[in-house]
Amino acid sequence: MNLPRVLLMLLPAMVLGMVPACKKESGKIKVAVVTNNPANFWKICDAGARKAAKDHDVELIFRMPEKGDPGTQREIVKSLMEQGISGIAISVIDPKEQTRELRQVAEKVTLLTMDNDADESGRLCYVGTDNYSAGRAAGRLVKGALPDGGDVAIFVGQITPANARARFQGVVDELAGIAGKNAEGTPVERMIGDKKGFFKQYGKYYLYSGEAITDGPDESKALENAKSAYEILGDRPDVCFVGLWAYNPPQILRATAEAKNVKVVGFDEDEATLNAIEQGRCVGTIVQDPFNFGYKSVEILAAEARGDKSKSNVKPIPYRIVSQKGGPTTKDGDAEIKNLKASEFREQLKQLLEGAK
Image (cartoon, rainbow, N blue to C red; front, side, top):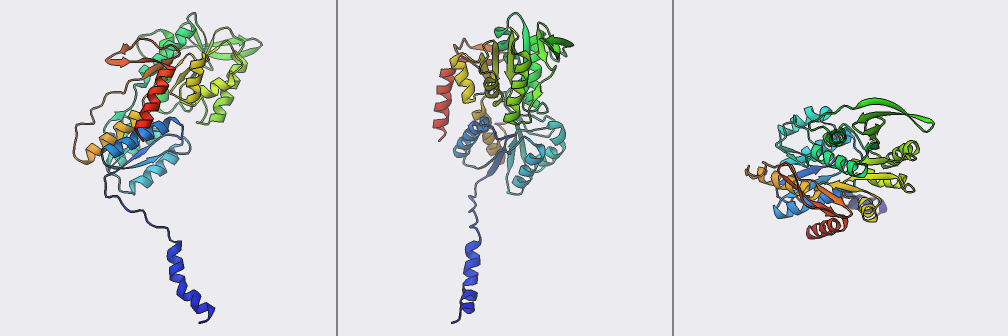
């Protein structure tokens, strides 16, 4: 037998060997969760979602976009819709831009919004924190750190998502000392040393740049933003930097590592933030509950797929306050708000994640 004939006979087997094996369908209900970026925050959410998938016997597809871009998220959702999912939970990046397409999703499968809402999207319900109330809690931490007033800079990845806008407004409303919402602040130009800066005044507090300082979301840009603000405000006697997304406080802490006068208030439970709280370098952080974001989202989607409508009547998941010394449990409306020591919270989170394995 000559070589060409041998190759011809082997060709079908070679071709078959080059074709990847198809993943066997589980036959289970299939649900999906899509985040708004790849931050470590979402790894906790993933753990909760996977525990719920196991508890409720469904197949889970969990996707984290490489960047906080609506177009990237749109392509992920489009792909998932072609995979036979019965429902999807999405942390919406830009509600205004995405609402129309989300309505189309909601017409075909059960749609939940998670962490970031889009209340006109036709979604069944929202799973997440009351971000405005959480923002006001962050504002109270600022006021505790600067009781006589001072300069404040607020940092966040993007201001278009609902959670960012609500948190920001909650912080400045608290600083303004108003009971209602939507304090606008008074525009002010001030000389800071030999440099002129634009601020908005809220009560005794001056907001640097007059708005939230955004970074993309891009952690290197977040660090650059914090360094730039520190160059202007670093010599001031009463300064507080606030990071509204999980990666912002660690970048602020890096930028102000040599500062003794800059107070830091954070959001979420990044390891660097918790370490800084324990060391006294960070006043405190407002933590959500990403584990339960994931768990409850999958639980609701599984129930809806089976015709059970009892799970979707959900209230906002309470935020918690984490500080070095902790404090008593308080009330925010109907919600009980725990004030935990950083070490205590860290241990609770560790046990939660280990229990989900």
